[in-house]
Amino acid sequence: MDQPDGKGPDEGQTTGEPDSEIESHRAYWRANLRLLGTLMAVWFAVSFGAGILFRPFLDQFHLGGYPLGFWFAQQGSIYVFLLLIAVYVVAMHRIDRKFDLDDDDNGGRG
Image (spheres, rainbow, N blue to C red):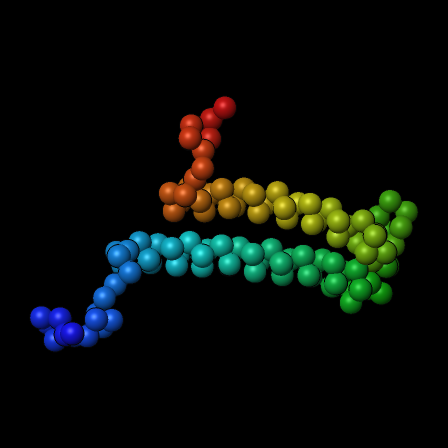
C-alpha cells in the first residue's frame, strides 16, 4: 500500500538516526582507522624495514655493542611495538573524548 506522499513502504524512510549522528559515527571510525593505519605503517617500517630490508645499511652502526639492524630485529621492534600500544591508548582516549564517547564517569580524574 502506498503512503500518502506516493512513496512505497521502503522508499525515503530513515533508520531513525539523525544525519548528524550518522556523520559523527563515520567521522569517529575514519579517525580510528586513520590512527590504526598510521601505527601499523610505523610498526611495519620498524619491524620489516629496519629489521630486514635496511639491515645491511643499519649494521654499520652499533647500539649496545650489537649491529643496529640486528638490534632492531631482536629488540627494537618489540620496544617500538610497546611504545605504539601506549600511543594508541592515549590517542584513542583523545578521539573518544572528541566524539563524546569517553567511558570515564569522572572526566578522567582519579
